[in-house]
Amino acid sequence: MLPLLILVSGLLLALYVGRFIFRRLRLKGRGKFLSGFIAVIVGPFVFFVYVGSLANVAMLKEQGPSLSKDAVLDSQKVSSETKPADVTILDLPEEPQEEVQDESVVPLLGCDSKTFQKKFNQAAKTFKSNLRCETLKLETGAVNDSFIASVTENIALIGSIDKKTQQLQSVTMIAQGDGTMHSGANIMLGIGQLIMATAPELDAKGRGQLLKDMGLTPENLEDGKEGRHVIGNKKFFFSMSDLIGLWFGVEAVEPKGKP
Image 1 (cartoon, one colour):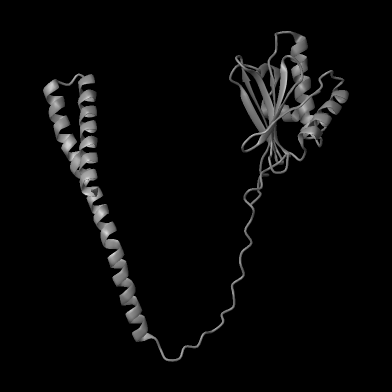
Image 2 (cartoon, helix red, strand yellow):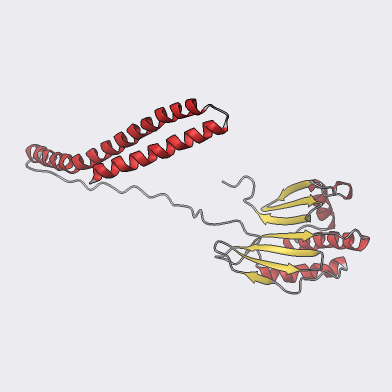
């Protein structure tokens, strides 16, 4: 039964490959005779290679059990002939096992979504801003959870949450200005509040230096511009697009120099 199945499947594969080669050559402008000639050569070649390979595999499977049985019998015979009369077994000291590090630990921002929401709103008082993150919409995912919050009609926050610890892995602000000075000012305030909520160790001078190091300056807000800068275990980034607006965010990373 098995040889018949191999032959039938080989013929079908050869016909398919030959037909495919013929059509491809015809589409490229080759003559009908030349295309057919090449297809006739390639088809049987594929057939013999395919059938030969499967036949060898089937043969090895049939011979495998008998060969294994003979090998076991031979090894048992040799073992019984060479086994000494008295064998002394020594207890060897066990080698200490190396401690395996947990590679599943992921970098985190050090706060959960509710804490971030509270810090973002508290930062608004420092900046004398009206931007508030009133409601978080939590979503459950297969790998990570997430949240989305609407700050204004033009500003939204998206966060990635580690499923195991419920700590934030990243927060991104997506902002689309409407061309007015008011919307532009709100975007800059939102950036400041996000930095203050996720990196409270930075003062006003530190936040300004961060934006400078990233290249996020008023004259640099053009389509296609982007930048990033790492502070400790936090990577700040931005991307500017005329189509989707400004993306500004922070994600947790492994600190530089950590083994």
